[in-house]
Length: 145
Image 1: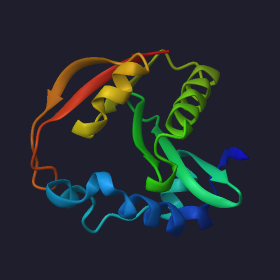
Image 2: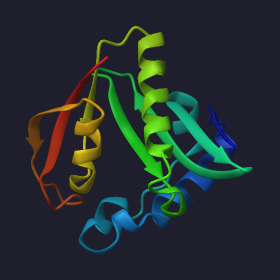
Image 3: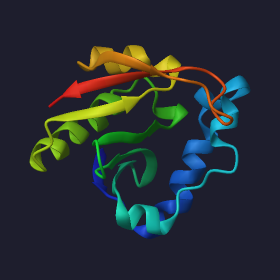
């Protein structure tokens, strides 16, 4: 059984490990996560939710609410890919946004994930230029809630 719960500061290490273990961020995409860790204070200040299956952390998402609301992070463990967990997390995120009165969510997507977000109803509205850590252009999508 899968549950989605509010993250707590002590989840930071497990979420960081799940993120760094993602096959989607190997090879040329690895640089964006280089040296990045989720901190307990980041969890306290943001909106983080964790998915657990049989007591194991298998996914999470975070929303940033400062300025333009944004889906900051969304990860599903490799072992849970194609299980419907991404859909479950995404629906939970949209419910959380609706509950908070948010009208639209910005998503700066990992290029291989853009199709998933489009299938969820997000529309490509721009492109973020490469940076030192993200050496590739990233699609910017908008999801109307």
